[in-house]
Amino acid sequence: MNVQQSADVVVAASYLVRPDGSVEHSRTDAAHFSVIPAEIAEIAAGIIRDDLVEARFRWMSPKKRLLAVAISLVDSGAEPRAEVSIREHVELVWGLTAREVDVVTLLAGGLTNQHIADRLWLSPRTVTTHVDRVLAKLGVKSRTAAATKALDEGMTRLPVPGGTDGFEHLALVRASATAPAKRLVPASRRIRLQPLVIGSAVPITGIARADGEEMVRGTQLALAEINARGGVGGRRVELATADVDIVSEDSIEKGMLELAGKGVDAITSGYFAWQEVAHEVAADYGAPYLHAATLDAMVQRVEHDPSRYGRIFQVCPSDTNYGPGFVEFLAGLHDRGRWNPSSKRLVVLLGAWKVSNLGLDAAADLAQAQGWTLDVVRVGPSTQDWVEAAGQVRALAPAAVLIGHYFVDGTVATIRALLENMPDTLIYSLYAPSIPEFREQLGDQANGILWATVTGTYSDPVSKGFAERYRRAYGVFPGRSHAGISYDRTMILADAWSRSASPRDYGKVSQEIRSLVHRGVNGSYYLGGKGQAAVAYPLASADASLAQAHLVYQIQDGKHRILSPDPQADSVFQLPSWFGGLRPM
Image (cartoon, rainbow, N blue to C red):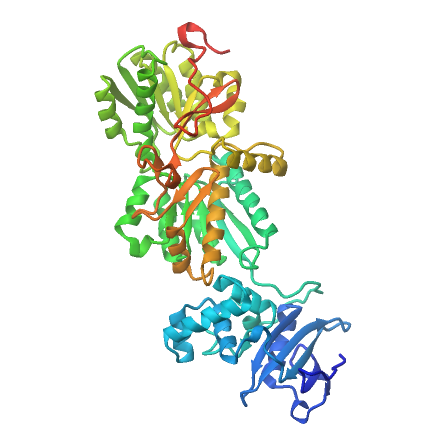
């Protein structure tokens, strides 16, 4: 390395350091740099060990001189070397003071103003002033952006003021600590911030694998878009998955523990039969957990014990909206003269999904107000149980039947059985038709089927743009629910991380999730209520800007068309072709 004297360099030195920290070669123009400071040599060895390629920082010497240090890996044959440059009396860029360098270093570690004050023996008010000045001098608006810029430009200092505890997530700090040697790989990249990782517990195999594919793809599409615009504060965001059998208590626990063991920065999941198991693992781990289980029992758990479950969020409204939504939609059809019920009876086929609650008490009251009765037929877990239950429904001859099942195979088998001899009964399903596999299995028999979801992908320009980007990425259009959920919650996490001083301050990130309102492809997410769950429009809130529409679709000519509520509706109800004995073939 050629070290040239310039106006901003009074003394300078360069060294070639071996992996054990010893010096192979040195050049210096100052007597007190004839020997490299031992601490910097150790960091250089750590740079080699951790294959960081390049690092720049300010070093506070024992004599309180602030030195500019640059370290880079060099190719020197069989064993790598680190080239170290040390300069003294270098102006601090952006006009920062030495104290402000301390502050921005602690910002990079994710410390709050109070914690910075404790480390620097300052008052919180003084630290607030320093932070404001740092942001102004760096020309950024957030603490995360300031930390990123300081790391990139070598304006953080070592030793870390107050010690390295809590700074292990910073690669430069880890490199300065003793760690076992590892196999070195020739490097061609610059030092970069450690990625943020979303851990997703998804059914890659098993009964819900079609939904699992939607979940993974929706997340991957969001990550591609986030990383294309620079990530979160300069950090890439990556995905780690754990394959989970959603009806196995052991598999759910194992998958959640696997993600926690990887040290992920947030956890997401769809729905589990043993959702409480996932809640307990997530509560113990402490990182934000965003799930889509639509279970009011889980919402109540968060509301009643926020100290334990306060970092857990349900990104969709609860299943208690399904029963009332069914009755209210039918009442609206009748009131508008679009449907004349063939009887005064409604039937709900209720599956054996653990802790599920479709709000059937409220639905029965609403039905009674319309002069209808609401009968409930409980169904076992197997597909054959659902086929047999369809026979019971035919004997009751209801005006409409709600299939309270979330899986494609059982729902399809039930519909086929009902269509054999149900000429004047509306068939209304839950959620399962959102999965593309549903229409593939039923074909033309799907036309006329009604179905609802507490969280579905809209048909507005925002959602259509998402669907088109998904198609370009994967060659098929997404389903109408979980692809959008996964996309949206990934964007929510990125937004909350970007608002936080440190993405790894789980309490702060959770606070940001509670405070933000996100308009996604599945509607609006506001998770700041006591149970930290999304709100249903119009059943629970009249404000669509803070809620997700309880969407009712009808499959018409092979397409999902939204019938309710306004303003999301893009079609009107059509009497199914099987009415009057004309059944689809």
